View 1: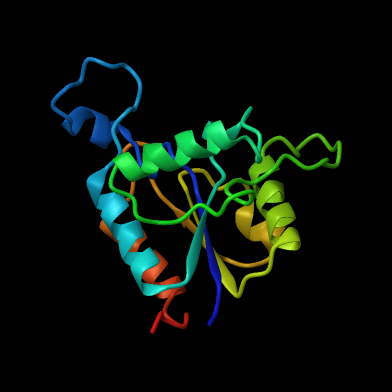
View 2: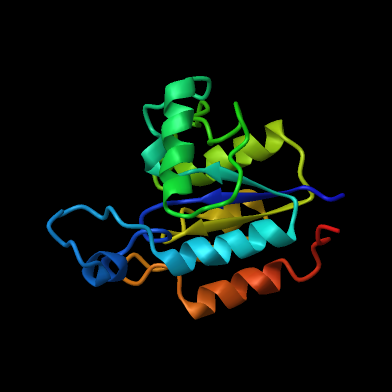
Length: 173
């Protein structure tokens, strides 16, 4: 069976201005509510394909890959929002590899983190959900980025784009 990775940002994918304004308890100034439609859509992808989810969001910064408490916190956060996908232990997030010290590396740092991850672990294909470009297509050499919206999160057009990218993927039996 084919293996696929789904690289996930949080802000602008699972959380957004729309999700924040739409919730009933808007007392918190931070985006603290996951959009149930984004969660459901990613659950749909996970149900159809042999998919490992990988956190590439800044939410992972400062968390160690082998820290069981951090791993538990990430899994629990997503599970409590209704997410049924899997973050594989000791591979649940992108790392911060040594980057070339060129002036523009800060902008595409996340793309290099994904590239580094893909060099470490085998997969047949992958998707990236992020509301910022980070030169993903250029750095990775393939167009697998579903660019969502910081304001509106994951919309129908983003879901359709993701489905078009997975159209040739092997489904679970």
